[in-house]
Length: 387
Image (cartoon, rainbow, N blue to C red; front, side, top):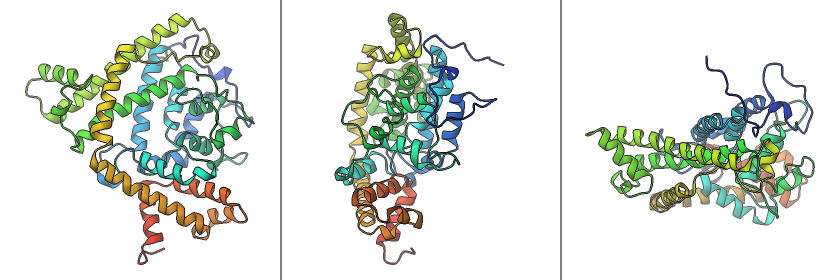
């Protein structure tokens, strides 16, 4: 059996956690960060990720990534990098599993539509929605709303992309008045690892999904930074390899290449910074986890290719257009006629003003899976559909 590696001085330690908003007795068998991870996995919002997509709608194929498979892949990469850096794997895993909980159905198209609909009612963003889920919308425990996660997990989730600046999203602005997450600093190193693992996962797996959907071909990738050299290397090592194996082997090697550069560069930054505790990481004013400068430029070239050849592909644009219309129409009808909401949600809108009702409608829609959103739209707009 392999024992856990000792934590580095700059790692987050559960016994030094700043605690939870609502005090609870510690577990005799699990650390505070392990409990956070387990609560996230058992949440309703996490289960819904199975039918929430990133680029393709769920019914377009069984093998495209969903938010759930993506989150699991991010967690695996985050754990591996954290282990190599001597960081707390459990915290990094919890952050990786939580980072997409606030996403709407239909990926970024759904979020864009809901953000536009909520512009006059406090706005909408998936990061803010994640905090709403973690602190309000999950109602499973007798003593509190939300999951009552540790300060470190909430801090890392809110600052997934780094420090926040004013004006703050509505939920984050309200929450930090009660539980200060120090939003102006970089988060701990584990949160930085989880964010970079997210980048590694979606870059590589969007290549896989784009090839599967025939939005581009292996030949189109020949001159793409990072990807082209790896494809050539695999082809040279395995002459005549069939294309599915070529793709899988190349993506496997590409993930390892990215993780290796990230680990080496992060070790260099950590050593140069001389940080000796987790709070010193937050106080630095710059990230300690990242790609080397040369590698980051190549990664940007890969991202540019995916943006042009995948995210702006006419098939993806058509799907996104339909998705936006579905979300817009759901929002418009339910805001105008909240009596059409399911009973629990309808009762919550009783006597509420327009902006409060709009927020409840946004919560309801944001929690939908792709499949449920399509079915709900059909029930509300198709006169022959059962209600």
